[in-house]
Length: 287
Ligand code: SAM
Image 1 (cartoon, rainbow, N blue to C red):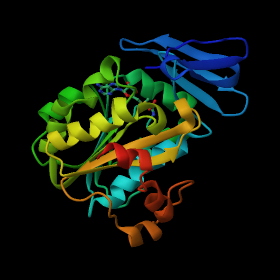
Image 2 (tube, rainbow, N blue to C red):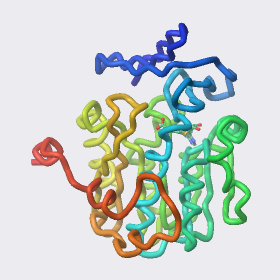
Image 3 (cartoon, protein in one colour):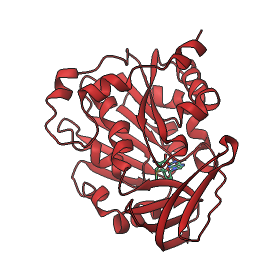
Image 4 (spheres, rainbow, N blue to C red):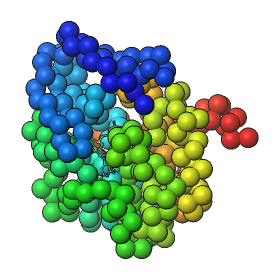
């Protein structure tokens, strides 16, 4: 979706051709580059945003602002489920979502299924703070295709599926399909939820967010909502996580969120409530 044009004269620039926009970060140097069996992974040292990971030229995360994304991909869904114990993260190879999930003492098992082991190994090296929960006895790292893993999952064996994937091109394309959501629905227990990164409200509402709601509901989920949050390093700087469930997803365990037994930098109960508010253009286009 984003043309991976790189201007290497001190500025890394990701051009989003379709939107007529670009985002740049000033870099000091490239720390690492490798072509894995799946994708080109590069690590850069920026002057002001910590380390930067790109995949095929697209920004994945920076040390400075990944907390916004990782916290919003995990805590709203975990505080919506009444008692999440078994969590599957599809993608998420940088391990930041895994770390947030494991902050919840009630979680008994969190499995991360990323197709590319090299993303995790490089994250361990260049983003060690994101990987600090990888040795938690409740964590399991599995390297394989998330689409296949979900097809093979035992019915009712998971409470929450978090789809922390790259953009819907290449190996991640099938993670945005009704067939995949059907497999999630089957693998999820009674109060099961799926949450997926769903790109920019401004740039991708018609092309990604709206079709995602339709596909999730066609797959059997009875309710869905897109939560919004700022994400400075992604196109437009404004991002969403779309939550779908077998039960209503706009109510959450607000008092538990208020009394959460761990520190966050962005997420709290008021942010959760605010992120559920829907812009007029979302509401109008549902007519
Ligand atoms: N926050 C990031 C973003 O939105 O740009 C995503 C970060 S995470 C690094 C994305 C991960 O999805 C990558 O590590 C990639 O290997 C993984 N991935 C892509 N397709 C996949 C698939 N079919 N199964 C499992 N993991 C997949």
